[in-house]
Image (cartoon, rainbow, N blue to C red; front, side, top):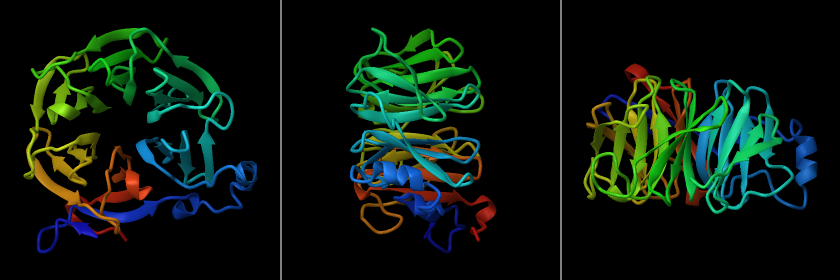
Length: 313
């Protein structure tokens, strides 16, 4: 499937749907030991994907709210694992972010009021649990500032933490409708220039802020026409700097330029390939691929951004 439809130049193509490791060519023999360890308890299959991210090695990390774990699909290394495999369980995991420089995985646990930290091997490595955190949801790493960004949906704010020592660098926003304020924010990402993009869900907009929280611009409003939002839930940037916004009630992804002007949309309600049922998170990688957590269809759909309209082989 491609979007937009002909005769327009194609910009987005569906290239895969991921529910289990073999959808990425990771076969049972590769994770046999893990499979036997999980036998009788759960299947290595996505049940309820929510937040997701990728790293430079091509690994895909998918938060599963039903299994209360994070699936890690390593297509290049031919490995699959889940975290945590042991120890205290996650209560309500929402999102995941990667600090590749220090080899750490951050997972927000909304019901526990904490962000759990794991090594790249899946070992517990601490947590962020402070009085500042109410209900942590969206996570992102801002490479430009070496900071972890944490959305606190309960306090309608964005928290900045140093990745060096995990000390707080400041809080951005609070409850409200004015520029720079939020109403039930849910997701965040950061661009290579340090700009921060916040999905301000119940204000039906995306706000763009500087790395220190100064308001730059916003786009979107409540409505049922293209360019408007009904329940925005996730945001990601593609290689061209375009902004992809998941809308859970529209069951689609709308694409905007860096000024917030609508370019196109892809997806739609349904169960067939290329369609969504209450989607949530979205992420991109260095290969021009876009990953969407198709939550109630229990899968991650993988799309390719087509530069120059060239279809993938």
